[in-house]
Image 1 (cartoon, helix red, strand yellow):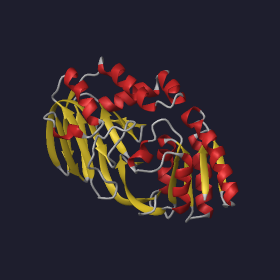
Image 2 (cartoon, helix red, strand yellow):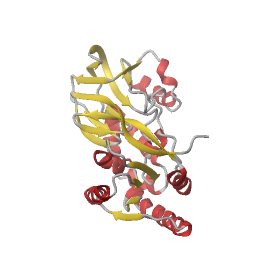
Image 3 (cartoon, rainbow, N blue to C red):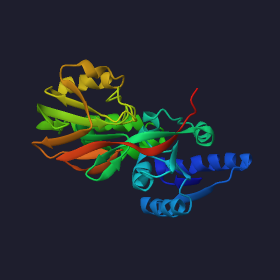
Length: 299
């Protein structure tokens, strides 16, 4: 198995977690290969070479959602299993798949877990594992990524606080726009759309349960559209989103389908797995059974 360590993940958390994991592997006498990386390009190069030599290997990422997202093209449709030991700021991938977040518990899943075949989202020819965000939530991600407070929140282990600060920053300047959301070829027209989320797992954005019914192996995309409400109403929405209770509100529409096309009267930035993935218009589709993921054994 290959451990890919993003030394810069979580403001240095990646390398700290690796030292803990490495000590345990040596104690167990486990055979492994490791590469300590500082850039996504370096990680891609090392993983590609390893997969070429070991086509049924496991690739274990010690890092954040961005590192996982960048490696998806190398793992998609192969016999390589992806393992995750979270060391980023959001860790939405681990959360979405109910993976352990404590390093040694995550290692136990790697060593004794099972392979689960999961779906992927394809957006304009690129792969996303957890969710796509377009509109207000994507603008929040953009604000957080360029902020100074993200670094400090990460150092304090308060990644969700950074997201909440981003919400406050974005709320004052964001303007909702009319949109057409086409699901499985059927157009749905909405006025004053704040956000459209396309999910493969229930949560994103540091634990927000945007599509609580989403399952990563059902061959379906879950779509949440928030529309036709005021800023004050939107703020009242956020506590309900943390528990998934927003789905019954009159200004929230939930849809499901295999393909989604979104057009907006104002071009909207789109984020996939917390990484910038372009702007609207966008076309996304679910592709079943494209990735093998290491998960805890069945009880």
